[in-house]
Image (cartoon, rainbow, N blue to C red):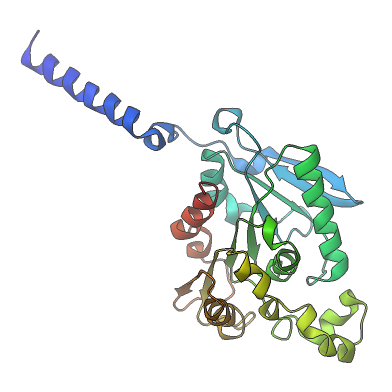
Length: 273
């Protein structure tokens, strides 16, 4: 055997040994990842359109399906192309994505009740895990945070991309009131019962970790009236909260919001607890 052949075999042996001692490395896809959005399956729950996007068979894990709960889902355009990068990485780890269209609920009790129906459908009928990670984009924050505040023991973590967490900031009480079947004045009087920034105590008590990425010049959902308040209050309660600043970014489609490795790592790590 020539020296070159011996060297080649030696390098191959090292590579194979590395794969054995590092299962995560061995599991990394070697070819183009299947388009996760093409795997979307639509169905109905409580008369509302819902969906699941499950990972390919070769990526699935044993036991209940780990899943990310995405909101908002309005029509068939959300989630869309922007989320593809994240979803590819979730699928590579055997994680599904699911959601339901509850309309412009702004986190109202009726919307939360339909969310609960989706949770029950997935966990009791479809073999999904009991503790999803919630992924809130924009006004999806109102929906997911308000459901989470009432079911903190069912939440593995909350990730947010410029999520709304303050009804007074967005959409404003006048616009949100009809979804709550209240007048503006009534909603203001009961705001602490429905505003995510005022409903953090159950999540902190359950030790639910949170991560947001938010632009510092967002004028639609200002960070200082939403994510910054969550961070300040949650940490004061002893909760774990990471706020990633996106300098110079507003409420937009900047790729950095949707291709944030720290956010993806946060989500995946929640399923390794």
